[in-house]
Each structure stands twice: as C-alpha cells, then as structure tokens.
Image (tube, rainbow, N blue to C red):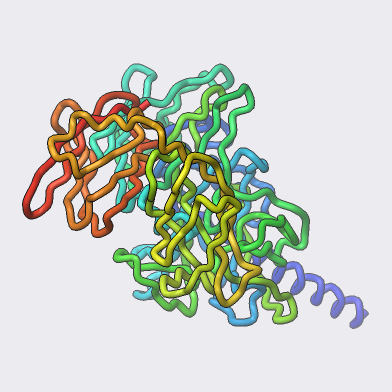
Length: 465
C-alpha cells in the first residue's frame, strides 16, 4: 500500500512539473479588430485556451493587438538552455504564411505580482532594419460595421471584410467591456510586411528569427526547442526566444537574469487579400528545460534584402551580424559575388559596373559557416526619373517605386516625406551618403520628399505604386 501511495505521489509531482512548463495565467488580452475577433477564437474565453498546453487558439487581431501571460514560476535566463533560448511560443503559421508578432518581457521589480514595471522588447532579426518602426501607434475607429484606422505616421486605412467571417470585426462590448465602442488606440513595434499576392496563393513570408507565429510547430516534447538561428525546423518547432535579446527603449541590450511576464503583440499592419488582415494567432507557450548537451550554432547574418531592381551604380546594403543572438556591429563580414561586375566594400556598399544579376553572400569572418545569400538585379541603363529635383546632386530611384526608394548624396541631411495634404509622415536624420528607404507600407499615390542639409534644401516627388 505504501508503494502504491508513493507511486501516485510521484506521478502527481511529475504531472504538476509538466504543467508548470506551460502558461499558468493570462493576465490581459486586448486584441486589435480582425476577422477572428468576436468569434470563438477571439474572446476572453479563447484567451484561456492557451493556458496549460499548446493546443489552444487565440487571435490577437491586426497590428498592435496583444496578450500578456505568465508561467507558474519566473523564466530564468539559464546558461545551460539549448541554443541559449529560454521559452518557446507556438502559433499556427504555415511555411509560406506567417503572421509575425513582437515579443516583450518584464521583470516584477516592484514584487506586486502585476505586469506594471518596464517592458523590454526581444530584438529579433528585423529590429535594426530602417523599415522597422518603433513606438508606432494605431487608432481603430468603429463606423457602421467598417473599421477604419489611422496611425502616428499620418497614414489611414480600413480592415477589409472577407467572405468567410461576416461578424463585426471591432471588439464587441459583450466580450470587451473596457474597449470603447467608438475608437481605441494600440501601440508597439511595427515591422514591414513581406507579402506576395501575385497569384491566388497569397504568401506572407516568415522572418529569420525572434518573432511569434512565425515558424510551424513540430512534435513533443515541447520543452526541447527549435534552434532559432537555423533554417531547419527541428525538435519542437515553433518560435524559441532568448531573454538575452532584450533591449531598452533606446535599443541598448539589457541583462536580465529572469523574467516574470511576457507580452505578444501583432507586428504587421497589412491586408492579405482573400485571407484577410495579417493577424497573429497563438496556441500556447512552453518553458525550455536546461540541457547543456544539446548544442548548435548561435550566430546569424540578417539582411534587409532589396526587393526592387536597383538603378544605381552603388547602394548601401542593410546587413546585421548577430553573435549569440545579439547584434555585433564590429564583426567583420566577408562578401562574395557570382558576378564580377558586382562587389561589396567594407562599409557594405554594393558597387555595380554593369547591368545584370548576381547572388551576393555575406559570411562572418570568424565563422564562414554562418552566412546569408540573396539575389540582386541591377539595371544601370534605366533613365532615372528625378526631373523634379531642384538640386541635381541629390538622386532617388526607382520612380515609380513599390518597395525601396534608393537615395544618393544624402549624407548629414534631414529627410522628410509628406503626403499631398502637407502632413509629415516620416522624418529622420541620415548620416550616410547612400540610403535605402522602405516605402512598402505607404498607400499608392504621390508623395513629396525633402532633403535638407546645412547649405541646401531639395524637394522632389515620387509615385508609390
């Protein structure tokens, strides 16, 4: 009898230990409007489905929607965790349809058991891209069953209702008593959409690492994580996160020994055509168990790949070497090209001497097995349309543009983009002579760009396709 009682006790202990690896409590759920909101996948009851396992389903809605949760115990930044990661978040992405979310962490510094201290963003592969917007706010407006939005970049739009979900997309008062039925505002980090709607199979491509609802799940045990720096989907799959990726509001890395709260926030504002808005879904999360024997590469090279044809003899590339998951700007890169007419110098500036295409590869100088390859197309014979420039030194191309607007001779200048109403929708001080500006998020239309330095001010027009 004693042995039976001991066995039952051990089984109960093992069961409780297994349960403690999963989310223990959802503390806040504040979705953005979306096609799954006010359905069984987008209510407070749905939020509880992600507790205790990885088989729930919760929609966060469009950009800015979020959920805050915790585990039974603080998550340690454990030195013996595989690949340095500390917890894994599971969503429902497919290989060519991801709906990435930014992940934030918080310590309970005031020991009141509430998420009211400082949030730190976990800096993923896109964090340092110029196309990534920090402190983006988006206000959703409820108007006759249509949800309009406007953000702090003077952009506006609305959520298109698709044929699959006919209910109201704006959070209803019966489920969300604390959300105004007129309008409300959400904020967070916004990354650039990477959509391909050129065919009936709409694609939303995953990011390299550091985002939730980004990579598919594999199989149990879910405490054995995927290596986020590997292209393979291994072990449990899903999206593994390292507390050491945490950065403060100025983008500086911080050292956290443990965290008590986690927030997941939809990071993209985009329409996926017949698939509806890009909106993060979460099925659960799991704490990683220490295992010093499970090893793998922890370095990565992240590139903001130019998607348009380049019409210039040189262009500044955006490339970021990560070592142990942290961006290391001083790490040397070695470049190779499949076309002798294309070279990249030590400042990561691409030089082109003829029309053509090439595959560029950048690898870490101290570890050639860590690299990133991408294709580039250049057409120097293009007649660049910059006739509206009052200063012939400044150049921009292509025009019209769909993804990236390439700018030359803008060193130590202030760049501003205006809409035709005269509102500034983007502004930044540029320190490099060559700059590639992401405009993929802009609505189609005509915009003005001004370039001002200590001696001149140039204003030009460009057309966003």
